[in-house]
Amino acid sequence: MLREIPKVRQIEGEPHRRWFTDDHFDLVLWDDESRQIVGFQLCYDKHDGERANTWKEDSGFSLNAVDGGEDRPGRYKGSPILVDGAGFDAARVAAGFLGHSGELDSKSADFIYLKLLEYPKR
Image 1 (cartoon, rainbow, N blue to C red):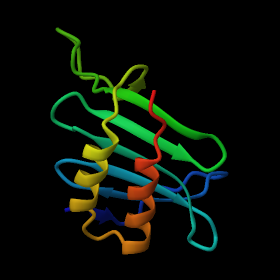
Image 2 (cartoon, rainbow, N blue to C red):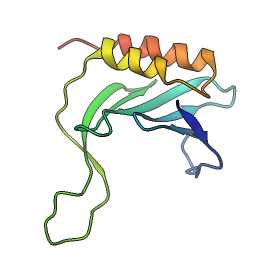
Image 3 (cartoon, rainbow, N blue to C red):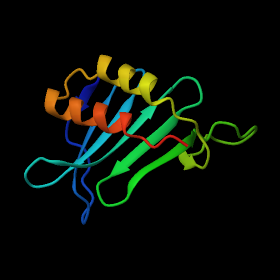
Image 4 (cartoon, rainbow, N blue to C red):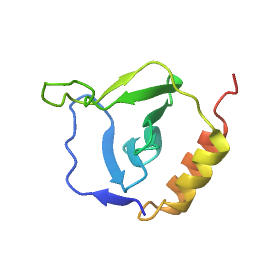
């Protein structure tokens, strides 16, 4: 179940950030002064080709694969980065997220669940 990480670093000029994690998902939420969600990034399939679906109120969706920085023989592990290319099974990911929503309040969980189902089919 997703649990909130306390005391998440805030970045000046960005909306307030919250972070939730478990073995299957990482969720970063950005909210405004009235605690309305203005963006989120849901990382999923953490153990099998991790991907990130990001939604921002002003720019919509972006979908990326996560390069974990580990495929570098003979070198230290690199920092994970987002790279192009990833498929998205909205129904599967949304249902999995809802089943793991844990410490997330139900209003936010429902918002994210419904927003994931809006992901444009390509």
